[in-house]
Structures are given as C-alpha cells and as structure tokens.
Length: 395
Image 1 (cartoon, rainbow, N blue to C red):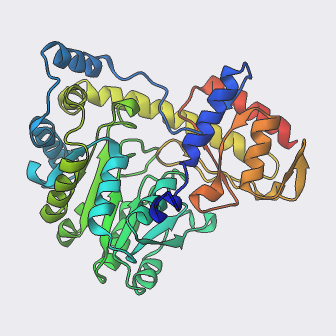
Image 2: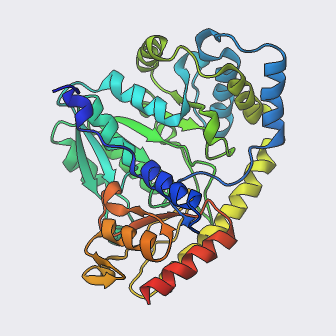
C-alpha cells in the first residue's frame, strides 16, 4: 500500500470540499448561494493591513525568534485583562491558525489508543486530528433536546473509560450554542474529579449574542490552569482567515513540546502577518471594530434562525454565539426533492445544491445526521436570497 494507514483513514474537510464545489459552480455561471464556509465576509480592518504593509516595507521578512516575542507578550496581556488568565509569554505559542495549534497539541499529547472525548455536534476536524495522532475519538452526544450541550454526568461517565482529553468548544461550531458560566463551572467540577486534560477551543469568544456571557474554561478554577490548553486565533474575531495566525496557551511542558514540534515543522508563522496580529491586539480601534461586526452577526443570526424555524418541517436552536445555524431537517427525510431521494443530511444537502442552488454542510459530518449547517457570515441580502430558494424547495 503506497499511502500510510494513518493518512488513509482521513478524508478532506467537508466544509472546504463543499465550498470548493460551490465556487466551481459559480465559476461555471451558476447562481449559487453558499452557506458552507465559516469565513467572515467583512474586510480585515485597515489598521491591521497597514501594520502588515509597514512590516513588509521595513524588511520584516526573516525568521522570527521563538514565534514572535512581541505578539506573545500582547497575547499574554490580552489573556490577563480579558480572560483572567495569567499565562506568561513562555507558556504561549503562535501557530499557523487555530487549526494548526490544535493539531500540534494532539500530536504532542495523544499516544496510540488514547481516548479523546469529543462532544457532538463537533467541528469536523477534531475527530480527524485525533485519528492522525493515533488516538480514538469518543463521541459524547448532546442532542437538540438538551440544547446541544453535554452534562457533567456525561463527562464523568465518558471519562470512566480511561479517556485522556476532553475537547470543549464554546461558542460552538456547528451549533452556535454557548455554555453559560454556571454550566461550564459544573463541567469543570466534573473534570476535576477525573484525570482529564481539557482542550478549550475559544476561537469564537468575542462573537456572543443577547445576554450570553463568555468565560474561559481555565479561569473557572485555579486547579484547571495545569489541566487546560486554551486555543484561539484571529480569523473570526478580526476577519483575518487568510492570515493564518492562531495560538495556544497552557502548561509549560505542553507548550514546550508544541514549540519543539513546530521547530521541525514550520519554524515560525509569517513575520508580517504577526505584525498585523500585534496591531489587532494592541490598537485601541480593535474594540469598536469587533463590536460592529458582532452586532451585525447577531442581527443576521437572529434573522436566519427565525426564517428557518418558520419553514415547514424545520426546527432551529437560536444562536447565542459564533455564526452558524444548525437546523433539524429530518422531517423531510423519506421524501423526494426534484431528482433526489432525501434520506439523510447528505442527500438533503445534495438536493439543496442541485434544486435550490444553495450550498450547506450535512450534519452527519458534525456528528448529527438530523441537521445541516448554514453560516450567516454573509450579507442579509445573500441570506434572504438563499433562504427564499430553500423555502421554495421545501414547499
């Protein structure tokens, strides 16, 4: 066999594949509305781009020492002031996006056969990263009836199998639900009764809506600082997906191991992209920039959820963070839509693309085959255009 067993078990990211398919259809002249990729439609703020341009003009195109001293200092200050977490720069690593940070951490902590608890619905890459590290994903199911949130009892029961890591993602991709501080605190107390290490993916921390409150998992109890790795990045908060700057903060031995791995793998993230990230975390204009995007996302999410819930045979949990709707469409399974026999989320998504020219992601890829994922990281005009077509298809 030419390919390794390890890579043969991993497929392409579905969100990327469907986005690419939608763009191909658009290039062929077809009018497709894409709700597939979780990519903010706003421009990167001008002051961030200006900082990167200035770095280029100043010749900042060389290797950077220890993955960006100044940027790690800025992240350390941000964590202290906003998240109540005292991570010195030495316990922070800057990576090629938040995805890269998670991948490196799994590689450094997971041994062959180690179990990793992943609440479902989950982001599509968690399970594949675990498998690439030789681990075993253990899915902890959180249904729509329980608000797509796992319970402390589920954590204790799943941990009893000898699991090593629990992955938490709040606000969540794909469900856009957010655990309240009390809900997270209860899960934290369950974790402290086990030997679990927590990977807390907080990439959507600034995109929260209504009266929702965000809290970092490691800040819930002093004992969690040595049991938690916090992951974040700039793609969602600052509309910088193409800049590929993410980071992780955690216990010194884990961050050192990740740094050693990356010294052989990537050396350092792009130097002038780091300059833009430094501006994002230090320029006083950032707060208003973030808030203006957050307000617009909240309006779009409320609108999309209301429209989806009004469609026949569709139910949708209200988004409290991130920028996704994850409606249950299983009432339509067993019928034919156009030329497609709809039996699951994959065939529903196929029908939506072929009949309504709407690209969305099957929920089965996130661990829930009753649902599909739509992003509202696009204009209200596009949202209504796509939902009009979807509603017409369902009727």
